[in-house]
Amino acid sequence: MIVLIVLVLFVLSALVKAIRIVPEASAAIVERFGRYTRTLAPGLHFVVPFIDTLRFRVDLREQVMAVPQQQVITQDNRRVDIDIAVSYQVSDARAATYDVTSYVQAIEQLAVATLRGMVDGMDLERALTSREEIIAALRGALDRDTARWGVRVHRVECKVGAPPASLRGPTVKRVGADRHGGPVVPADENGGARGTPRSPVRAGLAPGHRPLRQDDPRRIGRYRLTAVLGQGGMGTVYLGRSPGQRLVAVKVIRSELTEDSTFRRRFAREIEAASLVGGFHTASVVDADPHGDPPWLATEYIPGPSLHDVLRQQGALPPRTLHTLAVGVAEALERIHSCGIIHRDLKPGNIIVSGAGPRIIDFGIARALDSTGLTSTNYVVGTQGFLAPEQLIGGPITHAVDLYAFGMVLCHAAGAAPLPDGESLASALSLLPSRFVDVITLCLDHDPRRRPTATDVLELLSRNPSTGDWLPLPVRTMVDLYNPATGSTL
Image 1 (tube, one colour):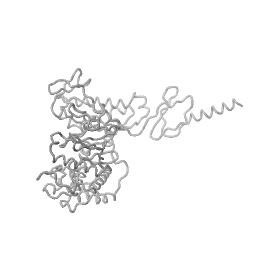
Image 2 (cartoon, rainbow, N blue to C red):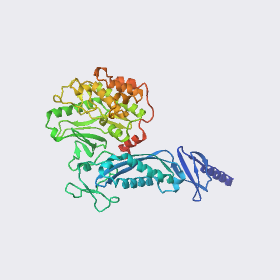
Image 3 (cartoon, rainbow, N blue to C red):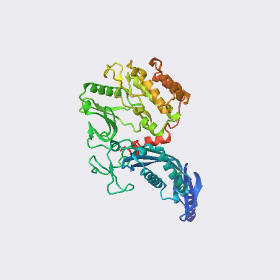
Image 4 (tube, helix red, strand yellow):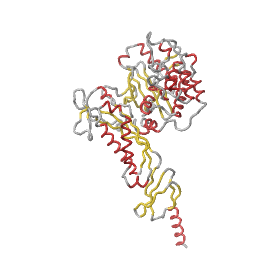
């Protein structure tokens, strides 16, 4: 009796072990006595127990791999930083398992080798203007070899930029290594080595962020500074960490401006404006000291590139992305205007593209409606190309100037601006979907009284809601590089 029970239990155990479920969008490799037998598609399968073994599971979904930023030396001994993102998918699970040790590492190594071999023969100017040529070469090399690894490449994206030191003109000196191999050491102004640079991605920096220099502060208030996010007319914006390890963007005012009482009042106005608006579609104010030495402002850090960077690298946005961008920015303007604030410098560089939607930043020249003017006579505040006609002629400044800039932002995002020589805005807009043409045309009316409010824009756009992920895959990859969850900003 006991023997029978044991036998039954053994059979049941064998049956349970024999039934295997392969998850959706994946494949499994079956080996028999250590040799490949078959590939299992998603679903329920019977595997002979104690003879067949399930050795591997392969993800068949489309994947995006960000290659660590490459610092490459050009033919004229200049350094360029290149970011590469490869979208790929396993097409042959057997080949991906047995024909290559690691197809992920193989893709990265092939991309880096192709990139270095190509840029090595370019001067700095050509490297910075040959993005499409570099992408074509990478795609050709990957298409030729990845098929043997059971992988199909869908897209290749890259971003080529020169670090600030390269733009100022210092040369790059190779120390103890050739151009293809070991460390590259930038030379200082006198030709001396300053140390081996680290790739921003490997060093924990997102694209566009640079390490702190010797003359940059290491701490402002209670915030430890870790990188430089950008520089502008008012000062420098740093990436910082609170005592609780939260990421913040800290704007530190330039020392030569701190003695200007008018400027200090304008900066205090920025803090007041940003605090009033809140953080639904803007960066929330975390802390500030407008009377400090130097004055500073800390806001929530929004992980993501600016719309300017996205458009420069990816070109015009698809309709679904454009619609979500327009609704998000209009919703932010509605909130800003409800607080009695005019932004006055809405442009792609002041819009952050995040995974959760667009965010408006930089209230540096915003002005409360009931405040007195803080700018000198005949001084136009804003960015050329996004200024409303009344700003150019010194007319009254109202919420309508932000709606004009909003219309111009959509023109750039939709590919209707900047205009080719000889083409009118009307002819460029006629090629876009009508739901955007109508809104943009209303916003760009030369009479500010005829422009819609942000609420009007929201009502017009809500008639055609969009669904799904608002970011195309290449833009999503750009955003992910800024996300602390990926480790790129830690």
